[in-house]
Image (tube, rainbow, N blue to C red; front, side, top):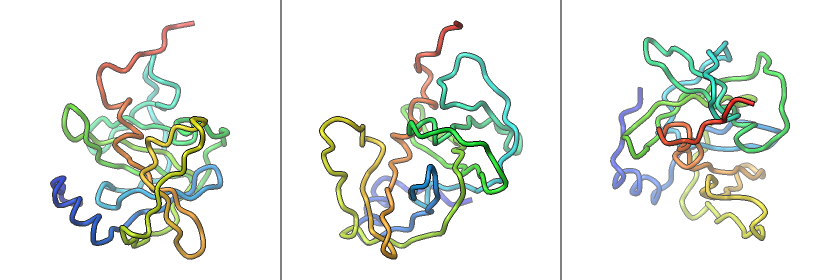
Length: 170
């Protein structure tokens, strides 16, 4: 398990360059700070929890700890796809108003680890309010391809907070 870094240590690491685990979801490549990744697991069944947001697939038991699992395709409003042998769950640690939480995110497949210098990260362009870029902290070009670097805290904040509005039964 990777030790947790303070916000100041994370800022220093980001200024000098950081490593990102890249993965594919919906044909696009995304990256998440490797220091947030706890482990990568092959897809397995989750237990559905009633009245959760549509992107929350359920929970899984991770060595005695109950971990919420979100479908990144649904969270990012991408087309659904059947899970297959390349589908994985990236278990990440996120910061919430209630402290550090562990969450699994289901992605189509893992790519590789990239080192990205802070000056290589470009801001998300203004898309005229059509898309909410709050969960994308920047875009980097690595090996000739664009990688969207996600703010994992913003991306999964809703499923780790207790005041999330639940869907009412139909």
